Amino acid sequence: MVDRISRRLFLGGLGASLIPAAGLAGPPLVSLRPQARGPQLSGVERLVRAAGLKGEVVFAVADVETGVPLESLGGDAGLPPASVAKALTALYALDVLGPDYRFETKLVADGPVENGVLKGDLILVGCGDPLLDTDALAMMAANLREAGITEVRGAFKVYDGALPYVFSIDPGQPDHVGYSPAISGISLNFNRVHFEWKREGTGYDVTMDARSARYTPAVDVAAMRVESRSLPIYTYQPSARQDRWTVAKGALGNGGARWLPVRKPALYAGDVFRTLARSNGIVLGRVQMTRQAPQGTDLVVHRSEPLARILRGMLKYSTNLTAEMVGLTATKARGVTPENLAESASEMNRWAAETFGVNRIAMVDHSGLGDASRMAPGDLVTVLVAARKVGALRPMLKPFALTDSQGRPVKDHPIKVNAKTGTLNFVSGLGGFLTTADGSELAFAIFTADVDHRAKIPRAHRERPDGARSWNRRSRKLQRALIERWGTLYGS
Image (cartoon, rainbow, N blue to C red; front, top):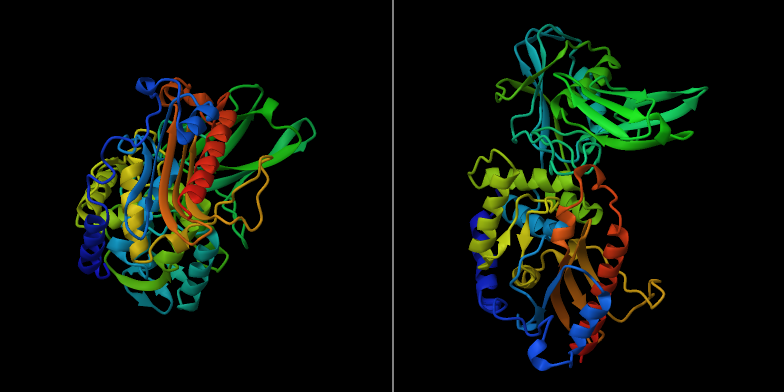
């Protein structure tokens, strides 16, 4: 950890002094159903009604300089934040681990090395690096040979016990979606395997590999079989040492490719490393997994990019695995050993309460993929205002484009927005900062969700359910309308 106590106290003091816990926790300044006022609707109520969204709409906006809340609708009501939650996870990791933190992946010798021969086990040790890819493993294999190792007499093991094993980030997602892979102390290529198919006569040529920018090693840990059917498109069956997939022939066409999730991260990384080591003249035995922390001599150490850069990429590309692995690592650094994502997320919720004085954040993971998470927009705004006071987060958030009436981006729009988007089917979120034409800076959070409708979608149909695209499109239109309103109303 880097300066954990001083940063926590500083951020916590800001959170407490800028927006007291009750500041955004009171009744909404406007009501979605103002029956007592008769047919007259306020401007923001008309925007919400015009969006035509079934479900709930909540939001909050505050002045960054003063922390004064400006407008809210259900600001203390929690909804699923989707990937907007990654903004909170980024602050959590920065505070606990520090921006310069680097993950290490090692090759450890458990035994003596004599004349290039390791008379013991070689252990590939994962320590939670979410960006480890095939290129990095290839470099480690080459460095192992450069270190003088030509033969390994013992076993080849992969240690994945630095983090808990999780079969799927959100078990409610379909088996085949690449954004909900398994988690463990080691990951490779975001724990996804590349499936490609090409028509060959009446059949298909199928490959499963761990491709990266420079290498395309085939893998044994994932296997695909084409079957003569139309539906379901994919089926998944685990075995002791392999992810076994089938795909419907009727869905393949002439060719294509997609990434599938990996459920056995340690075997996957070990499978790929064996291939890369063999290309350097080092033959390794069958991959063995271990969750016992290794003792031995470091032969090769791969260090990740600094955490700040990792988080910037996480926020830009909304990578779920990165959010979960950095969140789990931060929780361990706080002295808690979680057994699953929910326990780690609970620790992040406690951290948010301690640091910012908010108590309506109830995450079940660090990525926002699980729809059981709840976050009140008023609480997120409290966090955003405090973070902005110390220069955190906004520089990491990508610009959010405002559009004209035809949905086209407006170049040089006077309102500048940096925000984190979040999208699940029938759930949409947006949280971040806007600067008005006169230079005023506001922090905002907007959550919309049709939770009841989402709960009725069968698991097999959750990748692209009927009506989800149009619902989410209307939600995004409402988000932009609210930002335009705030930029105009509070920019003078």
